[in-house]
Image (tube, rainbow over the protein chains, first blue to last red):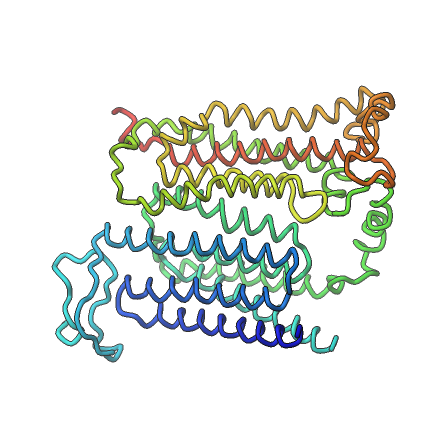
Length: 130
Length: 353
């Protein structure tokens, strides 16, 4: 029984790690602040949940499991709040979300990145940029 | 199986050191001060993880709280004064500093080859005084965490010096930047609106928990990792979080700058006072075995800590308790004072308003 729990827990830890890795990829690849934040925050809470759940299964029911639960509760409180604050700050400083369809364009003729406050409205779809 | 564990540990060390290297290069290359500060925070967090791998839990704790936590906030506060970007220098002016930096690096790597192996029992640090601490802590001091025993009891005088250094740093920042006179210019809480309502609700939930955790770290310090320094910084983080979310004016109404600096001085006074009490009772400075006179020590119930069979070290237990309390007060109040100094400083143009 314990053997099986260790295997399931280990699988969950690996799944959580992969999910966090996916999130990191999303942060690098997604087009604007809000979608990047979406990738980071969702996979962060999800990945941490999977990892902590896996560790809890491996350790069995003891004091460490309770501490892992508190870690999880802390992460579930703070990460969404931090994502909210970041998105709030980005919106407050004038970052507009990109609306429309996108295609990944080669790096040399890339559309201007959304690095600063945009003066005009939504940039529209990626192909029309520049 | 042990072979596999050693291999895994080695791989983990290499991975963490590579992450530190990447962080270091990125810090040196970035031109944005804010990115550099955040990368330094990441660097501290990774090195804290690495210290955990090396079984130095107390140091890892300090690194995580101070390096990744408070110093990031203070540095971010400092960049509000600066332009937020570094200048790009001509590469020819960088040759001499570059050669000096590479030379020092080579010397350090060369020196590192002369260090004893990690955990080498025959190395000078582990063979003489370290070994004496390991062997005698249980009967001399009677606390399970030997780091706390060395830090608070064997080397109590040095730790007093560290606490005074932190206090002096707080005084220095306060002399340079003041005690937060700008707080009166901050917007009233009514004017803030409900823009950051999620943040405020979460902060309201978290601040009591952070304070509770600080006290856990404080009073758990002689059993597990932690102690006055870490707990003090965590306590200060709770105040700083309040200031970041609710505004400096609200925080300074709850924890006035005057109270903070008074508490910082009281902590040092408590620490040194414990030493003086030991002298009065016939011991040396910070000799906790003489903290209580025998008459007082006889009045303490034998099962106060739940283990009447244990050899009694009431002087040691209470001495460590009081000096850790002094460290907690000084560190927390000094961190708050430094934060007030940075966050509430008057910019040059504003002074006349």
